[in-house]
Amino acid sequence: MSNNLLQGKRGIITGALDENSIAWKVAEKAFEQGAKIVLTNAPIALRMGKINELAAKTNSKVIPADATNVEEINKMLIESQEFLGGKIDFLLHSIAQSPNIRKNIGYPELNYDYYDKTLDISALSLHKMLAAAYKLDAMSEGGSVVTLSYMAAQRTFSFYTDMADAKALLESIVRSFGYHYGKHRKVRVNSVSQSPTKTTAGSGIKGFNTFYDFAQLNAPLGNADAESCADYCITLFSDLTKMVTMQNLMHDGGYSNTGASSDLMDKFGEE
Ligand code: NAI
Image (cartoon, rainbow, N blue to C red; front, side, top):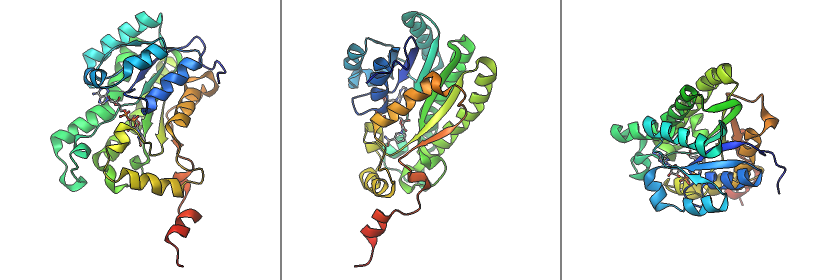
């Protein structure tokens, strides 16, 4: 269903690896809503993933860029504007990776080289993209940037290790850069704090499936899936949310404000 919410808008979507990626759904919906888009991902992900399939479906161009490399980001932003035919109206930052999680290293034992990489890929990459766009004046006035976060930025989830710290930093960058970009060009910056979602990044976390089921029972609406997350992102790219900025927006079926649901009580209750 299309309401042409993004008709005439130009966007960049990072992080679409395969059809499970949240970014994949955002790209499909942005196209459906009338936007012209560029897809970008790390060169290695372009070789391993299915991004060309998505590009064909959405009439978009794939421009590689490692999100930790400022030079590559600059190049990608310049080439994107050439392809799109003007300044960028919206940008989805949908990027995360933790070598510590991948190698199953617990929080007290974190490897600091890996920790630096986690922060660089999962949080500083947002600053780098925003700073590059700001300096190139690549975003149009009233533009919108959305990044994806997780509630472990506010509350401890034992399995989320250094990614929790990365998300806390990410959300702080949303506020700080949101202030500067808002003053400079009325560009808004928000994070969407999403439910556990079955994607490559999500499923890489040990204990993910157990936690997914737990959250599903606790949230009154159940877990929000990737498709509904994409719908929410589309509203944030649209002109219907022009005054929303510097926010961390919960998209979790009510999980974050629920102590214990009746479903969970029943599961652990006495006979
Ligand atoms: P995904 O694995 O499909 O997407 C992660 C993307 O990050 C991949 O496309 C990967 O290639 C890209 N990436 C990694 N290193 C990169 C680099 N150096 N340069 C450019 N791109 C790079 O997984 P998903 O779940 O769609 O993740 C997207 C975002 O959503 C992440 O920020 C994640 O933390 C966030 N999120 C995911 C949740 C989940 O349970 N899946 C829950 C809450 C937030």
